[in-house]
Amino acid sequence: MFPGTSFMTTMYYAFAGAAVGALLVFGFGFMSRGGMTPVRLTLAGAAVSYMILLIFT
Image (cartoon, rainbow, N blue to C red; front, side):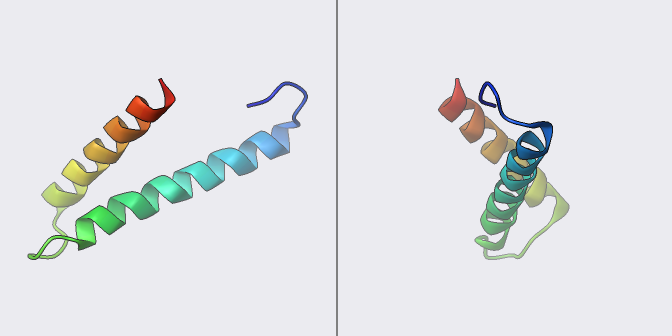
């Protein structure tokens, strides 16, 4: 992540990022009227993935 950071610090950042991504996906999945379905979770995951890609590139 940053030069000079330890391996454990990088692992903590990766875990925190994965948790935030999972919360976003489930949050988008819960916002729909019909509840969560596998298709909606898949589409929410694709949307979050694309959003994160746009932010960090």
